[in-house]
Image (cartoon, rainbow, N blue to C red; front, side):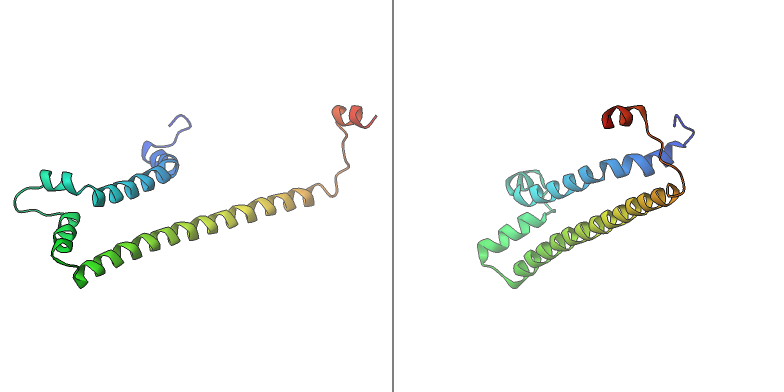
Length: 128
C-alpha cells in the first residue's frame, strides 16, 4: 500500500503466500484434533447431529464394518495425496528458482566478459 499497490493485491500476492504454510498446518492440525476429540463432540453436538468421529466410534463398538475401513482408507488416501502434492509443487518451485538463479549468474557472467576487471581498494590491499 505504501508503494501504490491496492490492498487486495497486497493481500493476495504478499500476505497469503507468507501465511500459507501456517494456514495449511492449522487446517491439518484441526482435522487431526477433530478426529481425536470424541468426548467434546459428543457433548457439544445437538440431538439430531452426529460427527464423523462419533459415527466411527459407535460403529466400532458394535463391530468393525467395511464402511469404517473405507472411511479410514479415504482419510489415509486424502492425507497422502495432499502430502504428495505439497512435496511435488514445492520441489517444482525450488527447481524453477534454482534455474532462474543459474540463468541470472550466466547472464551476469556473459555481460562481464567484455569488460575489464576493475580492482577495488579492498582487493588491492588484500593482494599486496
